[in-house]
Amino acid sequence: MTRTQVGIVGAGPAGLMLSHLLSLNGIDSVVVDNRTRREIETTVRAGILEADSARLLVDTGVSDRVLRDGHPHEGIDLRFGGESHRVDFRALVGESVWLYPQTDVFVDLANARERDGGDVRFGVSDTSVDVNAPAIRFVDSDGVRQEVRCDLLVGADGSRSICRAEVPEALRMHSYREYPFAWFGIITEAARSAPELVYAHSPRGFALISQRTETHQRMYFQCAPETNADQWTDDRIWEELQSRVAGPDGFTLNEGPITEKTVLRFRSFVAEPMRHGKLLLAGDAAHTVPPTGAKGLNLALQDVRVLAEVIERALVKNDDDALDEYGPRALDRVWKAQHFSYWMTTMLHALPAATDFDVRRQLGELRSVVGSEAGSRFLAEGYTGCWPA
Image (tube, rainbow, N blue to C red):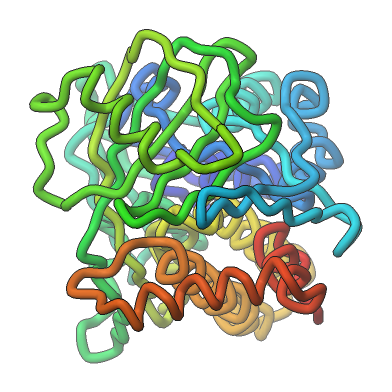
């Protein structure tokens, strides 16, 4: 049996960042995860950091690698009607975003916790939690049964959270929206096709052209949720992607060997409350968003920034009311992000059974965004996370 102040289920970026922030305030924690460190490091996830997320990594002493290996993007291209229209974040809101893979964020955080002597236990099994007398029970990677007793329990254990299920059903309010499409994603060994991300609306559906490194690109195109990636040849994939960005300006994608392909389903989801007694939820355990707005990882990091602050006030300063602030403060940002992600998704994707009116209306909306400083500023504020107070 181990005694600690905060027990954290989930050693992804949310759980590790919370553990790191707590340690800066002299608060002990234990983090457990069913996955091995290797499994988390090799799972390809999101790659866009808001400026505040990048600053959180640097300013709290996790690592400054994002400044050296990441790529600042000062805008994006909205492409429709076969032409690209740049939205300049730097000019509109004075901020950029950083292209920096979530796997690198995880590596930086895992290294920082190891460097600082953090108690992180990967590869555990048979995990269960007790929210009344807060505890985490599990079998460690050596096969030994363990129990971690704590003052507070945090569920940062992803969209299939076991902690979320501990909130009594009568108190739960789960809000969600399913989407009738998915993303077909690839990684290709090819030089970047554009200096910044390209979000493309086309008669054949949405496409996103992103980068991973100077030699690898990450691309997606809208597909049916039941699509089987194994049934698509490389030639067919490239034909589909090229058709979605084609236009009179002659823009084409740099092609190369495809090293990975997957189908990504997504939905919008919010679980309320984010606190139940001594249990607090963070990141995907409490909410998920469509990837169109690049909000998921950033929301998780902002959750734990707020959570670390209120836990420090509760445990160190004996402020009994501090924990009550967490849910309302976090949910204010969550619902803004839900709106932004839904807006981006429905504006750019081909919608089932869409009429000619629906398509023409989408194009009118896109022209309104790029043709108006106010419209472009709204997109820039949402994408960079610089929402007005």
